[in-house]
Every structure is written in C-alpha cells, then in structure tokens.
Amino acid sequence: MLSATVLIVEDESEIADVLEAYLRREGFRTERAADGERALELHRVVKPDLLLLDIMLPKKDGLEVLRKVRAEGNTPVILLTARAEDIDKLIGLELGADDYVVKPFSPREVVARVKAVLRRARPEEKIDILRVGNLELDIRAVEVKAKQTRLDLTLTEYRLLEALMRAVGRAFTRTELLEIALPDSEALERVVDAHLKNLRHKLSQAGVGDMLETVRGIGYRLRLEP
Ligand code: CA
Image 1 (cartoon, rainbow, N blue to C red):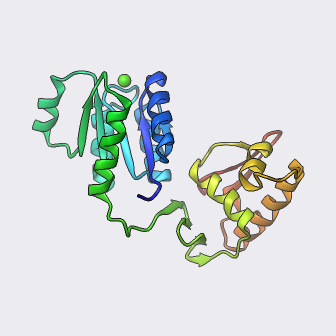
Image 2: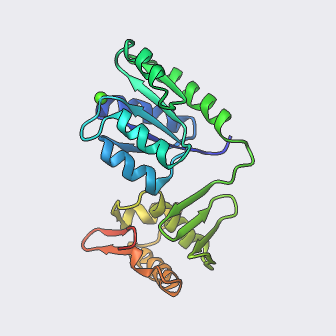
Image 3: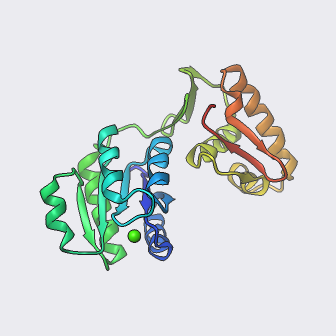
C-alpha cells in the first residue's frame, strides 16, 4: 500500500498520541487537529487520505466536520465515538462515514480499520499528490508543479519543499530542515539557507515565491498565498 496520510482529529492528546504512534509504526503519515475548525483547515490544505474523526470536539463537533468534509469530497472518514448509543443515531443520519470505532478502542483495531477503509477507497494505481495552493507535488514522480509549470528542483530542494508542504503553516527550524534535506551530512545550518534561497528563487519565477516565508529567529514555513 502507498504511504497514506491520516488526519487524526481528537482533542484528547493522549488518545491522539497513541493513534499517531501506531499509525506511524505502520508507515502512515499523520497530521493532527484538536478541534473541528483546525480539522477542516488541515483537510483543505493537507488533503489527507483518511480522517479519524472524534465526535465530541471543541469549536465544531465531529458531525459538523463530517458534513463539511462530505460537501467537499469523498475523503474516507472513520468516526471515533465514546458512546455506543450514538451509533444508531449516526447510521440513521446517513452522514456518510465509512466506519466507526467505539471508545475505548484498541489502537491495533483502529489501524486495521484504517487499512480496510483505504483499501476500499483507493485503488493501488491512485497517484499520490500533495496540493497546497498553486503547488502540486507528485510523490511518485518526484516532481513539483507551480501554477501548472514544472519546477526544476534539486533533490534537496524537493525534500525541503515536500516537508514544508506536508505541514503548511508550521515553522521549521533550520536544524529540522537540515535533518530532512541532508540527513547524513555534517552540513552547517547556513547550508539550509542557501538551499531555501534557491528554492524561493525558483518559486518566485513560477509566481508563488511569497508562499515560502522566513520566520525570524526560527527558520522557514510555507503558507497559503495571501
Ligand atoms: Ca473528544
């Protein structure tokens, strides 16, 4: 199975920690949201392959998130519910969840459900693509397009951009970026600046240079175009 991204939407951080650890061990990529609004934001920018969606959440509850996710597309959703009696209601509402798990659950069981739902939802030949604003990164082709134009990136630039695209809005330190881009090298942090400078130049030529933001005193982040 291709490496898939699972968005864990859960306000209890201990439960989210456990799910994240089990999913990562199985080779999944994970993103986390602790409230409904953040979940919708990440759903739009990260385009996860599946949502693990708790029902009782701050800001927007899981059912409202599910309705909005369904209005935007077919991302598979597995609901996490604390109460078995919710289930009849959920099924009756026909909200379009692909499966549900009742708490307390075994994380192993949740991972098994995730795999089963993904197998149903996505045929093997589906191309794995990340999209952020006008940027499109094709993981299988190791290729990035900005506004439909292919960018001529070095592998290091590609790795940096992939990491930034996977966590839009998050500020990465130079140390983190160095570890991502050149894991086995003894390079200095200013090497990261040089690569990011080249990357920004290429993004600028494609008209999306302002997506790559320097975070003073920290490092860099990717943001959606203003
Ligand atoms: Ca909750």
